Image 1 (tube, rainbow, N blue to C red):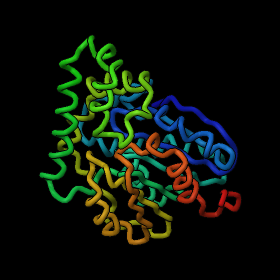
Image 2 (image 1 turned 180 degrees about the vertical axis):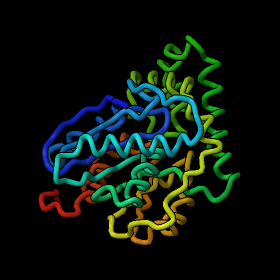
Image 3 (image 1 turned 60 degrees about the vertical axis):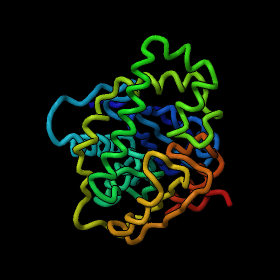
Image 4 (image 1 turned 45 degrees about the vertical axis):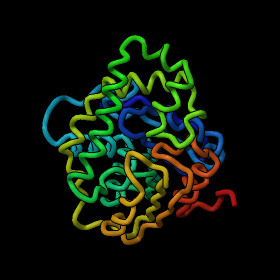
Length: 267
């Protein structure tokens, strides 16, 4: 499958993977921080942005992981292992690649897959469904409604700690994706299984926003069960999709997380 993507900057390859109902442009706010030091690749996951959806079938998460794995190999120069970073679903995909020893490092921002139990997972999916129900109810009036800050800011608050920093144009596109994306329903039964034997030699960084209302920060306590080598950061005042909340902080975390074998990261 051909996945639309953009490449900018120079240095070691860093592939950025967005979360569910998002798109590759979610990382644009970080590019000025990253591209002087990394060859940054941003990609639309299947069924997101400009990418075609996966065919219907079982094992959606396995097929999604295989697509991302193949994509990372395809955009990585010969003789190099790429670094990967992701948010939410993208964070889980990055960690799964790290577990399989396929990448040089993985940095995950509020990654999916560390639910305490089935009820905890269901709470997240029902949150998405409730937000999607409101968006669908707005229908064709959504772009006009989102033009009012009194509507836009509360509608974004579940995802962003600082909704005022999200552009109106991005809010409209994200709302359409939330209303139409098919993976939301499949997430209810997704297993988010990781390999039983994890490659503990791959550096792993996990950063979690304390104001994450989608995947609460208490889930971070489960990360080291799978990744004993993980460096875990809890970020005060940061939400589920942290890039616009604090671009400087998140850019620094991504550079630090992908610094293995790299000498030219900034202090």
